[in-house]
Image 1 (cartoon, rainbow, N blue to C red):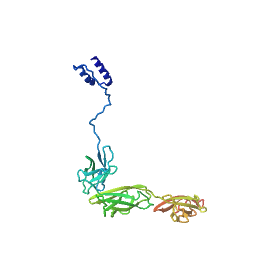
Image 2: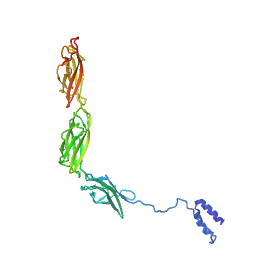
Image 3: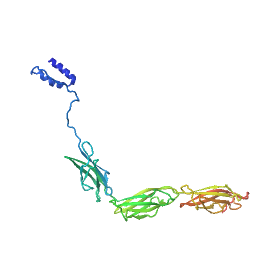
Image 4: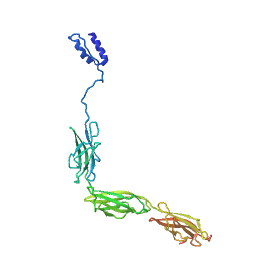
Length: 373
């Protein structure tokens, strides 16, 4: 018996399973006699094998939509993918398609076959009846003796007429002329709303519209022109458009930027003191709003604010490099004092006036300053 317990102790040192050892040793301790016991080789943890009730993977069909919401005007694409139990794409799998409720939307096919990448597509459209709500697309694939199913949810939004507003350029300048304002009107089905009256407005009144309203053409488009009202102004304005399609009123708006479009006049003088013996020659350079010299023939009008100066011409024309020259003399022998010469020119429809001050000196040095009118 002592030898049996020593043997059990050595076995416990190997496996630590005292209960197992007892189950082996105890029968030898009974009245069955003192025959020898073969305990065999010890079993170590982690070296055994077995099976359990764990889950196993299976084939699948998955569905996705290009947008979760569809309207009459905007159908969506349903993409279906079939994979085997290992996750690899399955080509040639046939998928039966349906919607759960069957009234909110319709599919363009009742079944599809997957391509080499395991994918297939179908088009989901909303009817024109104006229904709205949520539903599911269901895809069922029979793969041998196995049937797999997938689904994806979608929402149908009730369709409404729409109107969109665009302009050929969102930055307006007086020198570039009028731009084209374009309104596109569609009915609830997404089709062009023809012969529909469209109203256009400038909220700030800074944009001059070619007409307050226009009717849509066969493409559902109505157009008017939009131009700068005041070329000297830099500001923003909001343009709006509205129409009634059936019984539904639709509106849209966009913001445009107006930039001041001013030409410039620069003046240089041969001398700052004008006398009868030494007239002054003014060189006047006219530039457009882009900073480039104007061409030949741009007119410059000249006037004297205090009447002390006389000119060789009251209207000048620029040469090929945008330059005009003016000769200034005292208006009278007793003209004496400062005078303001106003130079006015119109470039690109924009008129600008630039003042230039000269000192007029009388030939009679003792003469007092005289204001002449």
